[in-house]
Length: 398
View 1 (cartoon, helix red, strand yellow):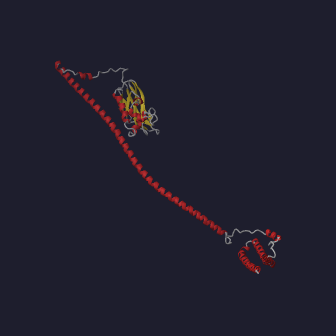
View 2 (cartoon, rainbow, N blue to C red):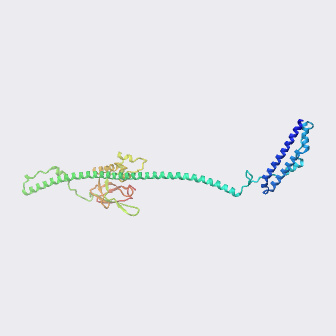
View 3 (cartoon, rainbow, N blue to C red):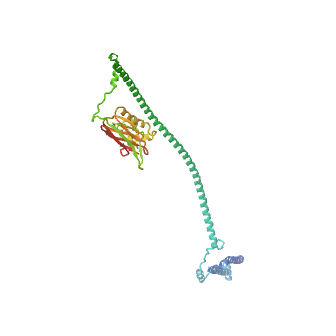
């Protein structure tokens, strides 16, 4: 009785399976109907699947299948495997066209239109460009902050530059005042020397006047006993008159210092101090220790003529250089080895009572960008001598 009960249960199960399969087929047909109109090949493949599934259900539910199952459960007969599809059916199923997937379907089998695709692409592009715009705004904000910072720094630097320019002007004024003070000291010392000479000459003139008065009294009274004795020191100071011949004429030197610029304009070195000495400028200054720090072998200054011109232009850059050079030249003049003179308003000068021989006309003037220095050799002969100082015979100029 047990196999009979099992058989009945299996029969009920087959019926329920048949019902479920029909429901599934109905649902599949409902979902596949919208796509049938778009593709005929999809419709044919769906129909073939439906027919095959119906044949499978009929074979399972046939009386022959039920008897075979009953005999297997009672132990009378073993069930032999029988293919659900015959060879022809298998060939037909293999030759059935493949199912094509519609690319316009989404997960819920709804088609996507080209307008929706384009709209989604636009949304993606808009999002991408919006992100780039935000990045550019941040970069622009950083640049604006940097510009503000640079403007503040620029204003501070401008104020610092103005203060430095004022300091430079003050230093220039101080250096000019210092240079003028040095020249005034030298001029005052020369004035003192001249005053002393004048006083000595005045004393000599007074003694000579008294001697002349005594001589007049003797001549009038014819009494030589009243003649005052002559002072020996006065007579020694009176220089004997020199007899001038053709070979013993004292030379004189006349020169002018004029610089002609590239535009053709001439500038005179007026009221400029010059020295006529027997020694070359470089030879005179070479052994001075105060000038050696400015004349290094690999330094920017190549000659003493350049050093003199630069120290005259900017004395604060080269402290005590101008005074040292001028003192060395004055020592030569004081030793009787030359003369000192200043040019007039036309840049001309004349020196007399010089001995014949070789001399150097030495001087510097603030002409051009920095200045001009002359160290011109000249041979003085008896009588007048004349020379012109220009850029061509200058020792340094700029």
